[in-house]
Image (cartoon, rainbow, N blue to C red; front, side):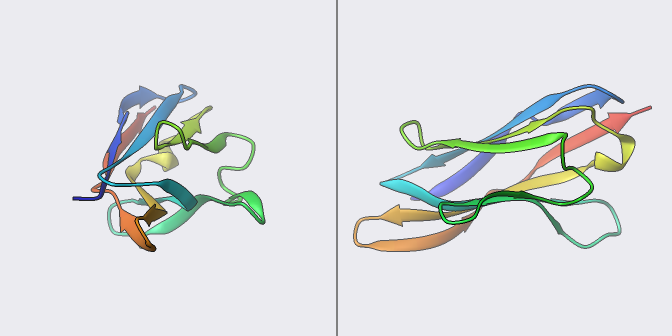
Length: 119
């Protein structure tokens, strides 16, 4: 079964850092485009960072200069490095990726990991 599993969330103080990881498991050949989204309580899910081989990385204005998206295709891992965290970064973070399986590509979502930034 192919799935994405996030980890690395937790509680951190303002100004701190966290690194979120997203592991692709199953019969995955490679990772294509990828993205991280977040959803805060009472708010819609929003795009935080994305990456395609054509456009490279893109970031929401609210996280530019603080967050960095990356991947390790060999390990089938996607990362989100988050620095200088603010209370408004508190949310459940989800990874999303196009995964190449044998003969096809599919769109997959992780289950989410909670990030809480305290003042």
